[in-house]
Image 1 (cartoon, rainbow, N blue to C red):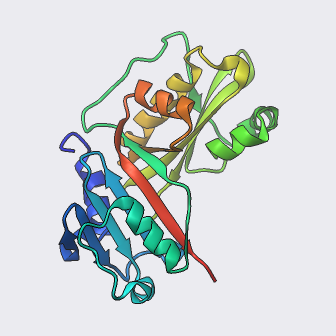
Image 2 (cartoon, one colour):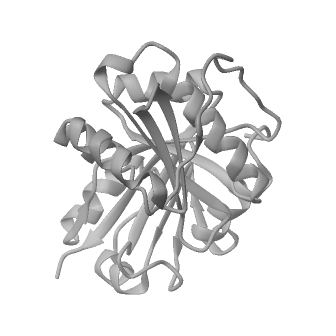
Length: 236
């Protein structure tokens, strides 16, 4: 994990209240009142097999009496669900190493998009399938948006959304089917990554475990897998 940017490691260490966690084998478990009430429980299973888990106090009360020694990531999920906490699907979390860079196709010239690009962005957005739009979550009003064009036609776009109050910007990328395999997505991701780091933020690439194409794009763009992250939304 030493290759990951220190701000990223510090963010997750703080988020999981790791300094106050109790350690049970490979599981570090903490109760933290600073967790977002909309995300009252979360877990990060890292590549080295260690697990960070944290819950808000109101969730911890439901878990009193449970034995944590030998608790695995899957068991933690089951205990949360038994306590009435709804878990979202697990995501992969990818980050760029502290020193990294990839080469994109020099023939492509992605640029930052602005409100002046609203018409071409809307055409692009509504050309994409509903499922692709949902998976990508790319919006023109996000913190930063870059696009790659084929002539006057926008064919690939990436956007960054600021992640909570941390140093991280969360990436989404959407490419039209006829532009895939031509380097457009990689070029636009590389461009927005450069911009993000110039602004003092660290790019985060997040996707679901079964999105094989998205995982492949992350790796081709120089991202490395930190681990698997799952977050909960408390039931009313």
